[in-house]
Length: 111
Length: 114
Image (cartoon, rainbow over all chains, first blue to last red; front, top):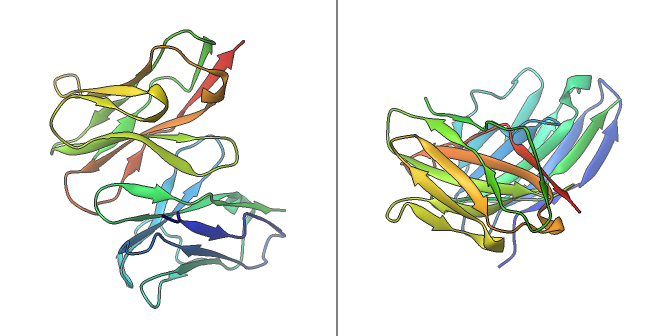
């Protein structure tokens, strides 16, 4: 069974630029999550989708972050404009029931 | 709301020695508990989970954890560590409800000394 796919694996941008990350969940998993993991900390949930609807986006900085899952399968997370403090690993996960399965993450560096 | 406390940010241990990584949780409702491992530059991989039933849970790579409801703990143990166990370990909790969000601890970095 293929795991959660993410791209790109690494991205370096300058502050005020925009960036987008892509995630393809495990086939059949209805729930998709985006997390931000800052160095030395545990993952923090940014947004949770159930199929193509948003379940929880309470910790998503909506002035600069957006996410969509239009067809209920893959998803994109966008940051526009990026700030220095957005440097982190962005993890995508998917689940069928209670267990979440994570992708390899996208490591973002904002200069 | 749920919360997770990992009491040690770093744990050094000699190769082939036993190790215990501590995790305590707080919740007013029944929960599911998880341990994830993160190797350098990789995503999180599920080690084991407690959903119900036996309080001693066995996972991959020789790890096990014991759910203790009275002490609200879910400590992770391995009887003999290997250099390949060097990684960050995260304890996590979610309410006993499908697709509810998971709350992660801050992680414990396991250093294996030769």
